[in-house]
Every structure is written in structure tokens, then in C-alpha cells.
Image 1 (cartoon, rainbow, N blue to C red):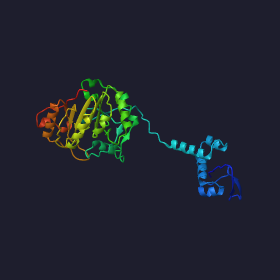
Image 2: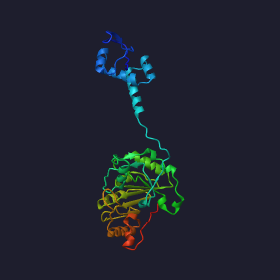
Image 3: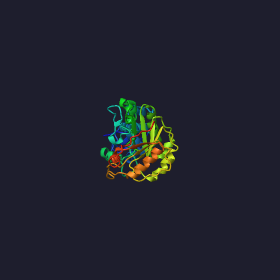
Image 4: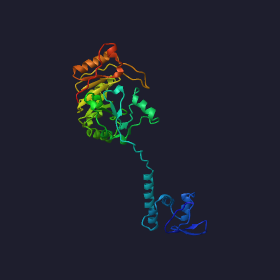
Length: 334
């Protein structure tokens, strides 16, 4: 049997046929509706509900304060509900170890580390390998944009390998390889927190890549930030050129991966580096290669404009098999 306590006034008790003081400790059955109990006691249903909240969930100190008249029933119920709600919040599990970067595979050799303080994306690209990975490890998540506060401090716990002196890929960190950090849906404070960590880790180079370049000029970029945009179709060319004319970053690049059609640029002076690649096997389709004429044309234009050129390994050595050339693996000076 549960109990409710009331103050002042009296009411008829149908069980005893007598009077019950509202401040008494006589039992009121929990299964009785608030309306029925209120009618018996001559009070409002909301008063009965507050009394039950206090009686069932309040701390002893709160109950004593009500009994002593130091705290109203209304205030005690509100305080109890707030304490109950706060207690019900589930804290995320603490990491067993300090967060670190992840090592990438050979297909992202230009940045041999990844760091994902934000994951998820709403672009819906049919060839997205990141969505496939998320579906495998987080079924039902639908690649929802998520901020991972427990991963934010990873740069503080990583040291640049000595081998980075001769292999710049070991100094490069691909930021948010499992997201688009500059999608329209990403809050500014998420981006600010990531950039703060980048600023505080000057020994590393942090590479950012987005399909939404119009947001990039909004930020002041740290000196160790390489800022890029994906240009996989001609429809993205103009937006990329327009945005990067306004981007103030040490290294500005574009990734033409997968290069799905011939790309024509009026001007490349706003970029320092171009990455060209094919499409790797994914749930949206099989491995495909761009026509080599497209690759040669863009490569020639980029080199004429003074850009460094990087051909991805997923071009399947077409440069050697068909043209007898070594794969271009140039990096910008940043």
C-alpha cells in the first residue's frame, strides 16, 4: 500500500465513516484515481498528483520540509520531478583508454590517419563507402550526424612519427572521413570545437573535405589545415571555384574522386592541389574507372597552373599499364 500526505482541511473518509485530516498519515490507495481521491479529500486532482509524486519519489529531506511547512507541496513536487529527471539521464560509457587517431588503408595514403569527432551525413551519395561502413557497425543508425565528444581530444594524445620527415602522409590526418563536417545540417559549435583542437595540435596537418564548399569561407583556418572540396561531376565545378576564391587556408585542394565525367575548369588558380581517383567497389555499384583522356586533360591543366597532382591507387595503375608512366604522387607545400 502506498501513501499520500495532505495539509490542513478535512474530508470524509468513506472507509472509516469519519474525518481524515489532510495532514494525516492515513493511507490512500495508489490504485484510486486522482479524481476519486480528490473528491474524497476535498482537494483538486493536481494536488493529489503532486502529493503522490512527493510521497513516492521525494528525498527524506524534501518530505520533512513539507511536513514542517517550510516547502509547499507544489514546490516539493516540482523539485522532486526535476531530481528524478536528472537521475534518469544515462551517462555515456567512459572510454577505457584515451582517444587516438585511426590508421587508414592504402587507398587513403595521402593521409595515413583518420579522426572522426563527427560522423554521419545527409548527402545520400550512391557511392558512399562511409555509409556502408556505418551500416555494418551501427545498423539502424541511418548514418545520422553525431558529435562524439569522447573523441575530440585525440590530437592531444598522438605524436607525429619520426618517419613523417620523409613521408608526409604520416603527418596528415583526414578529419571526419565518416562525415561531411561542413554539411548544412552541422551546427557551428561542432565545427568550432574541432578547429580548436586542430589549432592546438600544430605538429599535425589536418585535411578537411566537403561537398558543401560554400560554408568554408566562414571560418578562420589554422595554419595546419588543408581545406578541400569534392568535385566528382561538372555541376560542382562552379561552386568549388566560387567558394575557394574566398577561402584563406594554407593548402586548398579538390578531390576529383570518383571522377565520373569530364571536368572542365575555367580557372584553377584558387587551388594548390588536385587528387584524382576512380570509384571503389561499394553498395551503390562496382569499381569503375574514369576515361583516361579525362584524367590526362585535368592533370595537364593542373600542372600548367602550378598545382601538385596526386593520382589515387584506385586508378588501378592505368598510367603504367596503358601509358607506361609512373603514378603521380605530388603533395603541396603546406
